[in-house]
Length: 222
Image (cartoon, rainbow, N blue to C red; front, side, top):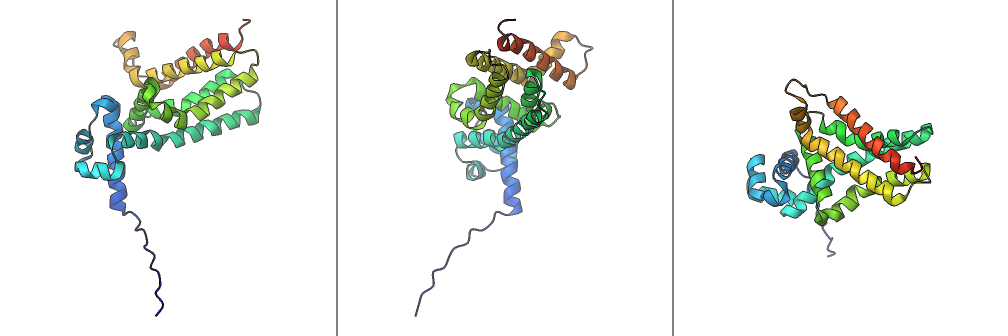
């Protein structure tokens, strides 16, 4: 009698399992943002998500893998919007450095200032990745492709500019962007007790500041 091979079907995750996974990832995002990679623990994440430690390991893996999942989870959405906005600029044809920097920086800034604590936490995690060389592979995978595209576009548009200086100016600009996301409260603290939160005003000031610094790099002749 011929024997038929039986193929095992992989059971699709239940809605309950998907919800638990998202809750764990959200909790991990907040804990990593608050405590950094070294300060965060699986226990802290489990307590924040209200699950057992074993569930965190099951859905997220060891701490380093969980951190990588957190970085990757929102990076594709961010990169896609940046690329689409840059493409629309190119279609219009008449753009300058200020337009390109806005296209690159606003996708993260608007999300971080949207009153969504998860996106603000993610901005802090991007700052952690950007400041620590041990995460260079994560930065190279998830953030460098679009950043390199911006450098290339600027060097093509402004051929007199030194690519190394343009790359440096972009890094300085990204550092300023992340500082605004993570330390915006300092602006209110230094500007006086009567100052109200003005997210759009802060974003505009940042873009103007970054463009002013970039201008000298793009046109060395002055």
